[in-house]
Length: 286
Ligand SMILES: Nc1ncnc2c1ncn2[C@@H]1O[C@H](COP(=O)(O)OP(=O)(O)OP(=O)(O)O)[C@@H](O)[C@H]1O
Ligand SMILES: [Mg+2]
Image (cartoon, rainbow, N blue to C red):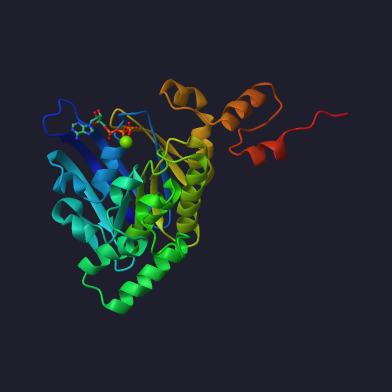
């Protein structure tokens, strides 16, 4: 079942001269992890904003085409241009780059419960969701903390917890680790992977750490200049090293190394992880 269907989508910001999205079409299946990569200014963030309806409902401009969201739990379908963002946010949660900009409450638990009170849920349901969100994001024990005192990784996990508590089936993350140190990045990407694999969440992840995308995504889309220029399984995208470099996308070291080794016939295929590289590397015969 397709949870997201984007059809012939083009978007130009008000007063902008050029379109930021051009004729974009793709689908995302239930439970899939779609990775999106592309150089700066290629339209990745703009695309994310169309998936929860912020574009065109709050940020206006010239919008053509359709974004259809299907709630896998109820089967209901929403065309984003006809649905309020508040309604869409119970199906699609959007996580942004900077965790601080998404946090504004005095304690961790208030931050998570904040949106729930606005949904008009009963007290028991609020508590149940609060407990689950704390548990799954590993923030249990930090309920009373002041969010700015948390580490970057914890803050971003809190932003995710607050979104998860709203009960979405789809999580869209726009470079959620770009402000984090390597420890924070690992925490957040580990959580994203857990949510996808263990909790069946459908995930759209924009991440410029291509190594993670190649390792965990079911499918990868490459954007440039507002268009999708490549789409395929991580193994297929990894074959296109030349093209990716040409587009200005930095390749993970393991990919550079494995392409080089294959050229020298020390490897018969391109591998995506250091572990795989070590185990497939042909040992020189003694
Ligand atoms: N609010 C805005 N008003 C006008 N133009 C905008 C606005 N936001 C983005 N753009 C333009 O739209 C294009 C796509 O920008 P977008 O932020 O979606 O790219 P991106 O792929 O997310 O880049 P980055 O990797 O730097 O985050 C760029 O040319 C950008 O200048
Ligand atoms: Mg961006």
